[in-house]
Image 1 (cartoon, rainbow, N blue to C red):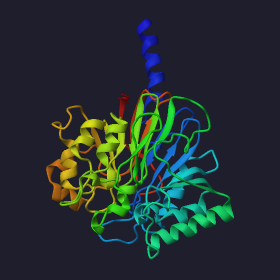
Image 2: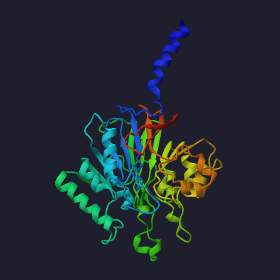
Image 3: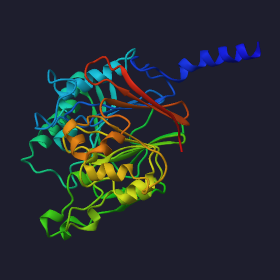
Image 4: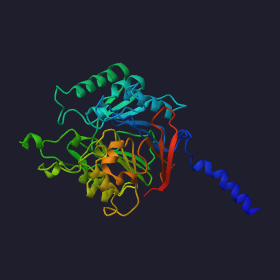
Amino acid sequence: MYRLITLAIVLLTVPALTQGVEEELAPWTPGTLDIHQIATGRGNAAFVQFPAGATLLIDAGDAGDVQYADPLPNGSRPPGEWVARYVARMMRGRDAHLDYVLLTHFHPDHVGGIARLGALVPIGTIVDRGYDYLPPPATDRTFAGYRRFVDAQVNERGAKVVHARAGTADQIVDGHSDPAFEVRVVAVNDQVWTGEGAKTVTRFPALSTITVAEDRPTENMCSVALRIRYGRFDYFTGGDMPGYPVPGAPAWHDTETAVARAIGATDAHMVNHHGSIEEENLFWLATLRSRVMVVPAWSATHPSPDVLKRMLSTRVYPEPRDIFVTAFRQATKAAIGPRAMQVASDHGHVVIRVESGGARYRVFVLDDTSQSYRIRSVHGPYESK
């Protein structure tokens, strides 16, 4: 009799702990942290629902009709509209809105779809890297379009605009004072957090001292980087920050190392610069020791063979890791070879769902070929560090 009662309890408990393949992802619930890396095939976009209900979108990219990239789920709508539809679906039962939109930097594959998205989803606060430090040139069409979007949001829709400040943990909040939850700006422009309080240091030389044009900081180096912490769980996302200087460039072009020193071990992180050529350096990987890595791929160069090799290497750190690629093109996999088969998932929206309190999390890979968003695979549970 005791065994029957125990079995009944187990059977009743299992559905609450996991979901099966081909089901629709259960809605977000209060106390849960959801991080969705959305696959549009045209750039970066991540939707986050905080434990108390606040919402954040990190980037809304649209690289346009570029070669060796495919729109997802198809080309009938622009990426900004697909992202808006995704947000509405994942907020079913609530009015779709974004309390915050963070634009990591001013490249098309990170901001190109924001105007279309902003026309469809109300936005409360826009956070960007600012315009004073290393402003894009006046001829930059992407930046000009972004400024028009900001003006319209502020003047016509009442949105607020703030510029990210490194070291701060009060610019993006969840509407309550739970000390277990925090969103901290780790780096932006020439400033990087030290890991102590809100202290920062300057990581680039003064612009006036850089006499070689190619040595000046790039837009990618100025990306806004965030750490999201919930209890024991840590997540990092850093736009397109590089980890290796190009040959002949100054050593300070490596922006990953200083960030790694500040944030330390991390449960999950979004792979920098889509897993392109100059990212995920050895110190970075060995310091974070991430259990889960998400590659927001959309181009044929995402991820590059060397980056994937470093990410998979147990000589860098011995612990197990799962790598999820949002759009791993067949030609790219063929060029990489057998190592490409070692990823946990090679296409689909990637959702990290952190349980209330932050002690455990799972990864759900969702269908990206339609708006069904059915679950393709479930991974975990993982124990937070």
